[in-house]
Image (tube, rainbow, N blue to C red; front, side):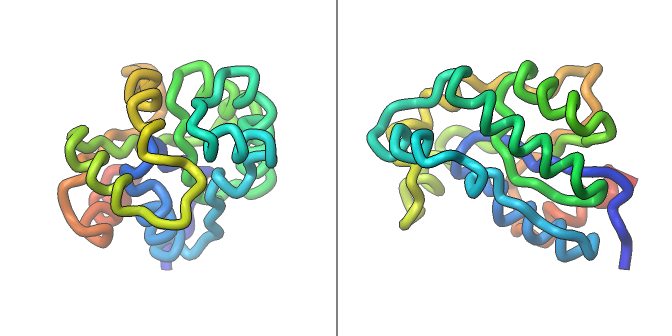
Length: 164
């Protein structure tokens, strides 16, 4: 079984499949998985559940907790939106070797996937704010973009091939 050599963040907007792909990638790599949603504080969860988008001040402490998790395990796979370059820079400050896997999908697919989710604190109404906030990976950022157009197993295969 292959072992990851660096922390990996599977990123993108809510509902794109970060958790599904991240879990499958961690299994494939034989490493641990963390869903960054589990690192949100109660105030952030309450705010999102009420239909209000988070602002940068809400996100900084959460991103610091995600960065600590990345720094603590050099092979971990983390599902985290990491929507802005500044957020990814914050994560890189804690874990300089982190690589980002940006999951890209058409708006219609993400809307449908978000609407189909149950038991998640983030309502589909907040997807528009995430799409507006999203800054795709820059050419100078360590990472890859992967189109979400296949089953999770196929996406993980593409990710593994690209990260070699």
